[in-house]
Image (cartoon, rainbow, N blue to C red; front, side, top):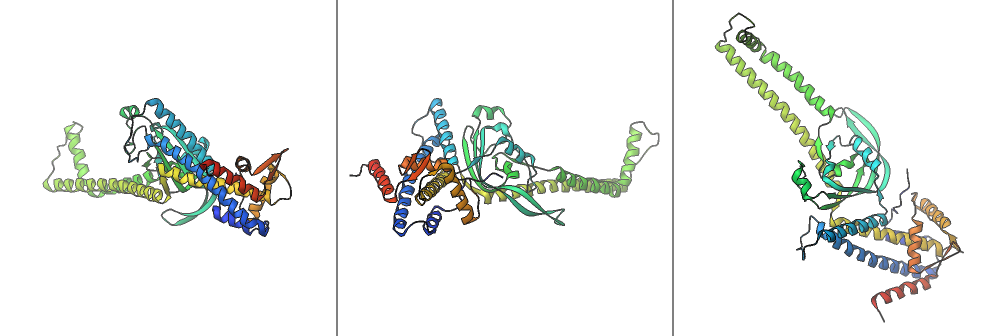
Length: 412
C-alpha cells in the first residue's frame, strides 16, 4: 500500500522532538525554537489570506449562509468564483496531504458490500460535479456477527482516516424536469463535507441523496417468512372455506353442475380467515418497514459519529490542517539541513528524514521533500548550489524572516 504524505504528529510535538533529539547545540536550541515560531507565524498569515479568498469565492454557493447578498452576481462572475473556489480548495486539500479518490476506487466502493450490512442507492444524475479526497489509508481488522449473532467472523478492509466530499448539484432546470427526491439541498448549490474513520466499502453512504435499499438476503428472509407463514394461514384458517369458494366459483363459471350453498357457519369462518390473512399480510409488511427503519437508523447513527464538519466549516478545518502540514514539512527539512555537516541533495535529504521518522516513531511516511524545500527557498533561508541544498545559520535565518515581516507590515 502506498505510503501516506501526512505527518501524524502535532506541530508542537514535532518541534519538541527536534529540540530533544540531541543534534542541536545548546546555543542553537533557543534560536531554533524562535525560528520555528517565525515559520509558523509566516505560514499562518499566508493561509489566513487563502481562507479569506475561499470564503469570498464560496459565499454565493453556501447553502448555510446567514448574511445578506449585497449585489446580484452575473452568471460569468458566479462561474469565475466557482472556478476559483475549486482551484483554491484543491490546493488546500493537497497542502493538507489529502489524496484524490480515483474513479476506480469509488466504483470498487460502490460494488463492495457495506460493513454495516446496508445497501444504498445513489442517484448520480443529481450532481454536476463529485470529487472525493481521502487521507490516512490503512488496513483494519474487525470482528462482525453473522447469522443473528451465532457466528463471529474477522474481516480485513481498507479504512480512511479522513474523507472530504465536494459535490455540486445541478441547476434548477434539471430538478424541475426530473423525479429526483433530493429535496433537502438547493439546486445549483455546492456542499462540502468532512468525515472521519470511513471504510472504503462505505463511501456511498457519504452521498447526500443515498437511499436505503433492501439487500437480496433481507428480501429473501422476509419473503421466505411470508411465504411459509402465509401457507400455514391459508391451510389452517381458510382451507375449508377455500374449498367451498372454489366450488361456488366453479358453479358460477359453468365449470360444475353441482349447486353450492354457504351456510352461516362457513360464512363466519370465511370472514375470520380473511381477517387473519389480512392481519398476517399487514404484519409482514410492518416487518419490512421496521427492518428498513433499522437500516436507516444504523446509517444515521454511523454518519452522526463520522461527520466532522460541513460546508464553510470544512475549509476552516482544512486550512488549519494544511497550515500544520506545511509548517511540519518546512521545519523538518530545515532541521535536517542545519544539523548536517555539509550540503545535501534533495533525494538524500528525503531519505534521511523518512528513515529518521520510521526509527523515531515506527511509522512510514512519504515526505514531501520538493514542497518543503520550495517553501524554505521562498523564505530565503535555504540555498541551492549545483543541486545541493544548504541551510542558512539559525541567526541569519531569523534575520531573513524578520525582514520579511517588517516589509510586509511596513515596520520601521
